Structure formats: C-alpha cells, structure tokens
Length: 47
Image (spheres, rainbow, N blue to C red):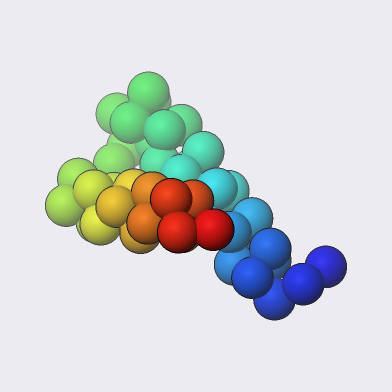
C-alpha cells in the first residue's frame, strides 16, 4: 500500500471511530472531530 493511501485509510478509520463515539455520546471534544473531518475532506478533494 502506498504511503498516501495508508494516510487516507487512517483518516477514514478515524472518522468512522468519531461517528461511533458521537452515536454513543462518548465524544468529549467535538472540535477535534471537526478538525479531522476537514483534514479528511482536504485529502479526498486534492487526490
């Protein structure tokens, strides 16, 4: 797996985990989630 693909995969996995935490009411800092979402969108849109 290429380095860029691995980084994108890690971002997607982190986003799925964020979604699960939101669903369970376990996300303590939503600002961190927003930052990760913005980074994921940037990676996908610039690919």
